[in-house]
Length: 167
Image (cartoon, rainbow, N blue to C red; front, side, top):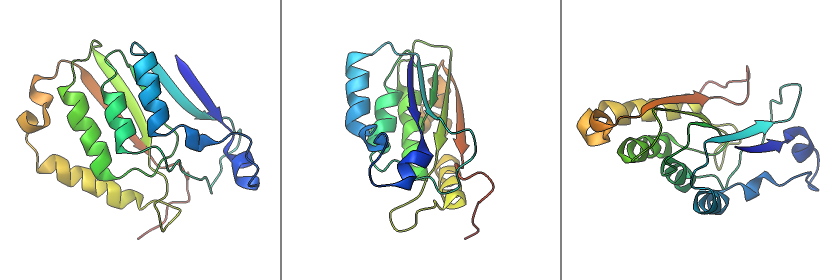
């Protein structure tokens, strides 16, 4: 089990960060996969007691991170901190995990879509629509889901609680 606690409020208050969440990007997860190949649980949790509506997403957590996590054969449960992920990146994760030779019967992942390069808050609904379009255009055989023995639960969350923006 790997638990990473991030206090997003302390990270937002100053440039002198309490802990740098950006170290938890692609290179970090590649090292985790290399050195902990039988890892079963990953929890990147916010240590705040109250919700934060202006949370900085992790820029360094990308499609490569998701592909790396898809390759962890024993991973059962994963919660990721808000990241600048796209619908295409999440779909790529689904393709990779459906084709992987997992050793678990069930796998759950909670992906939190944070802001994007020019807009701190994500175009959350746009990314959800992108995932749905990719899924609609892909058959079960092409996705790899038809022959996948592992049951996957994908939860996509919006980290800004009730502050969703239209547009």
